[in-house]
Image (cartoon, rainbow, N blue to C red; front, side):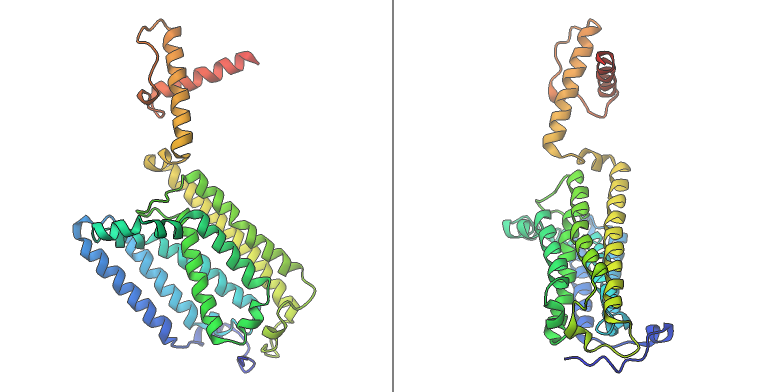
Length: 330
């Protein structure tokens, strides 16, 4: 059992002055940063990872260390709502910054062998969007709606393991949804947006259960609470509100950002629906274009499906003509 009852009442002064070295996390952050920079420099001018992505990855590592070394982690075993702030930061904010840094691309661009590894079956399965979504859901529900919190309160190993698990599961989930890495599992953007919506489900379930509880869900965890802390049930309800609002709000923010990225990029718009649906759309537009040519007396013959650019003026005219015919039918 960890004794956190001696912590002073949390205020702004305590929040900004409570720090611990956390040498293991500091060493991990330094090693990851050094490895990332070394591998990117090894690619030289051939690297496609831009400077802002490098800054994003390093910022993610810095935030990961700060949140563990600061009062957020220091008070996480005393206040359930602070524990939830720690969870949301480690599983959503930190991984977002790390994923935007394209670490898998950095590895892949060091040489043909590394690129083959990044496109291998084990890596493909590991970073597949479905794998990330399932892992994210299991972690969120399993650590909050089971006996895990009480077990973790009695084990330093479980506590550290939980923190690592949150970063890893968040990274894998967001790699498949907002990442644009050089890997085989490249899901269409429409599917990515759908998975971000699916990711709201475990956040909502956990948030509602904690928000509406009338009993202490974590009795062992609550034994270490200091006298000045919130009532255990109210504390858990506050944490549930944070999970619901912060989790769903974070997913919505990422989904909106992804939509904006697609709308403002012709390359991403092409990948919006995937090869199958895009092929169906192109074929249909080719047929409409051929029909329009026949109506106007053109004698070129039917257009081949691949001969019509779906974003061209010809395709737009064919689409408008199709809408006009549908309107006449009604």
